[in-house]
Image (cartoon, rainbow, N blue to C red; front, side, top):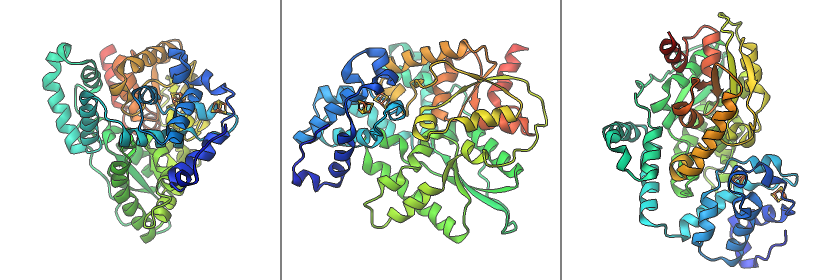
Length: 430
Ligand code: SF4
Ligand code: SF4
């Protein structure tokens, strides 16, 4: 694709980064076949190719985003299926991130949208605030039918029972030759799924690995809202803390068990590339980051102590399969632990979670969820496993089979407790 940026425009490092991405696109349209919004809506402007044209035009003109451009950019899930499909290596992720930041800087949204986005940015990255918001949500549940659609969608995703906060582990002093990893506790997950971090810690410790847990948001949620400065402000202290601890005693890896967060940490080297203070530290953090399944794939898992014999439909989160290109590891680990793994048809299509997408675009998100649940039902699996809290929150409320994190199943099979969702489903069935 030809571009027409002026020399003055190319002096902006973000435009300079966008230009070669745009030039790589040869308009072939292969990406449209795997784009969930194009598959559902059939509109070229809701396909990767159409959005690339809109973004190119917006950036070349150097003008504020228009309502039409914002509509089609907002409908993009950032699922990155297009990057997996594209034969030309177009780095759509960096392009759409840049476009979202441009929209945020130049477009004034209608006030209800501004308010909703501000509330999400103010609440979700902060576990204390999020916990309070969920308590408040439980009070408004009886009036849900009179709330606007987006607030109803938020409410439907809020868990009815809030799990107790998990204790975070600090390893006791141990021989310096033991393997050692950092574990990112995250933000939303510590509130709605603390059992996932607990299972991850138990599993790693069972392998003789010391785990140092780091609280804090990685910035991914607000990054996807186009709020770059806020996202960087959340990521910077995390990078400093991880780097300082790694310098005092090296980590084998920074383990992340929410694939959306893992994709973001792996991109810190790009995001902070022009930051004279943080560029090198961010690059170190990115290089050390491993999804928990990716890390465990290189470990000798303990022998299973139970024979669960369950069939597991494995749902590969977009951030896992498209963002991090991790495919075989979680399936192999589940099979090694004694589960029969079932493939879900149309596995490349997003479940509609996509960060805050299910709250901002509830109609498209619920259509994608329905489609995913139908495909899951066809597997006849007894449980659903996935590697991202967002997908669990999206699928679990409407899925007849219990939905849980892959590490909860691995932990259970190798000596840990039965996963919470599985226990609940079993006790309902008894
Ligand atoms: S990121 Fe996903 S929704 Fe967005 S254009 Fe690519 S395939 Fe379509
Ligand atoms: S597949 Fe790649 S090169 Fe082809 S239209 Fe899509 S983004 Fe452009």
